[in-house]
Image (cartoon, rainbow, N blue to C red; front, side, top):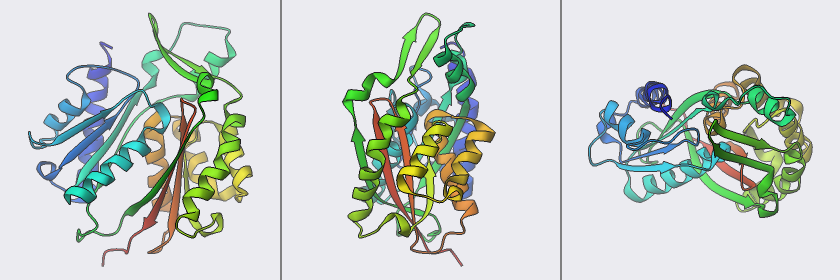
Length: 286
């Protein structure tokens, strides 16, 4: 915990400043700032300190989301989108994770070795604006579907110990998720009279290679449909909550989405929880 803030604060600040610059938004105009992190705790937290570092207003509403792990970006994005619609003001979502702080002592435990090899550090941030803005070339948050399988709660855990947080990651997690992926995606799409074939891009949290295989097989996707997720996993690892926003950015850059086309983002984590979000490409700015 002594290392968390000194390491996380500059990384998180850089991510938020880059997002604000990309969106041409002044930090003082941000109405809500939501921060997700499960790899460190401090008070005052990243939400207050990054808001100050980036010169957000002292009246900005702040929301800190902890304990959700790898899927936290999507509930954060969903909550912030509701605020933006209700208040007609821009907002920022930041996900910052420093999993490497919690490297456990040398062990022969295969579960721990997999966790150490899989998880990495990152910060990612995204600006959410009202649909009335003149910059209308992003992705619109359309809908969310959630499923929590309490029976699988012990398959993925993150517990505080004297030697840092210890990951519990069962090799049966992909099988447990498999039974929920198709129903959740189908329900999400059916409300908008869409099917899997109507989706132009897939931003799937790369929890691991087998999870991506399971998602692809269950949804009957061509291998290249999950290429962005596989690339992020290969180049950056599983960065917990920050990962799915990185994948989403890759989808935007590589898929050349046309106005009105849809993207589905999926993320999974402890609980056992699956979040699915439907997004729609907006018209490109001239």
